[in-house]
Image (cartoon, rainbow, N blue to C red; front, top):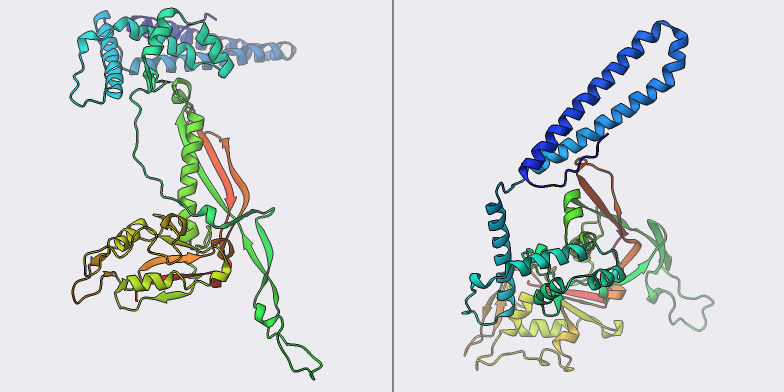
Length: 459
C-alpha cells in the first residue's frame, strides 16, 4: 500500500491526496468483497475450505485493517479541508505578515512603559519572524533540559538572534503563546495550615477522646475509701471518615499535540487550585453529606452575642478577642476581609480612627499575626455609623451575621488525609479525539473541640 503524506496544507495537494485515498479505499473494499466471494464459492469442497480457511481469513483481516487505516487517513484530510486555508500565495503572505505584526506589537507593548508610544507596523521584519518560528518549532519538541540545550546550540545565527530579540524580562515568549489569555482570578486565602492535619490509613478510623477532664479526679474527704465517681466513661472513641474528591479535565488530542505549553502541568496546577477552593469551602460550610462537616455548619463553637441588637461596636470586638481561653495556646482570629475593612474604618467622635496597626490588641500584636483574612468566610453587607458628639461608632448588620471566629484551630478542627491528589489518564468518554485526565484525593474534616474557640454574632 502506498504511503500517503497528509501533512501538506495547500488546497491543491489536499484535494489530490483526497482523490488518491478515496480510490484506494474503493479498491480495498472491492478486493475484500472479491476474496470473500471466492471463499464462498469454494465452500462446496470441504477439503479446499479447510486448506484455505486460515489463509483467506488472514488476507481478509489484512484487507479490513487497510480499509480502516484508509478511512482514518481520509477523515484526517477532511478535517484539514474543513480548517481555514489560504488559496493563493498572496493570501499566505498576508496572513504571515499579519501574524508578524501582532507578534511585534505584543513585544512593543510589553517593553514600553510609555502609554503614548506609537507602534510602527512598517518597521516589522518579516524575515526575523520566520526565523523565530523556525527556532521555536525546533525547541518545542525538546524532551528535557539537556535536549533543549543541544537543540538550542544547533540553531542558526539568524534563529538565535530572533529568539534573543523576542525575550521579555529574560524569558522566551513563543509566538504560539504570545496572545495567551490571562485571567485576574483571585484565590482566597485558605485556612488549611491552621487545622490539625495528619495522614490516616483507612477510609474510616477511630480516635480516643477524653470527654471531661474534670471528672477524672478531684478532692474528696480523707475518711472516704473511694475516689471521685465519673458520671460517664471518661475515655471515649469517636469515629470519623475521609471522603472522595474527584475532578476531570478534558482536552482534545490535537491540543495536546500542538500546544506550545506544558498542558499536563497546567492541568495539575489548575486542578490543585480547584481542590483548594472546594475543600476550604467544605471545611467551613460543609454539610457532612459526601463531604467534610464544616466547623461553622456544625455550630462547633459557643456563640458570643453583641451587646446591641443588629449592630456591633468596637467594645464588642475587643472583648470577644479574649473570650477564648488563652490557656488553649495560639488563638487565631478569622474574619472576612470586608469585615475587617469596616472595623478599621470606624472613627471616634473626634474623627480619629478607633483602631490602627497594633491598637486592636492590648498586647500590641500586629493584625497580620493575630487575624487571618479569608474570603471563604461568609460575607454580609455592613453599614458603618461613625461616632458623633452623642453617638458611638457601630457597624449595623442583620441579626445572626458572623463577625469573626477565634480558636486554637489545631485543637478545634482536624483534617485527615488518606490519599493526596493523584492524576491518571482515563478512558475515552466523549469520543476518540478527546483525552480525559482524572484527579482523585481522599481527605476529610471534622470538628473536635468546641471549647477551643468561639464565634461572634450580631444579636
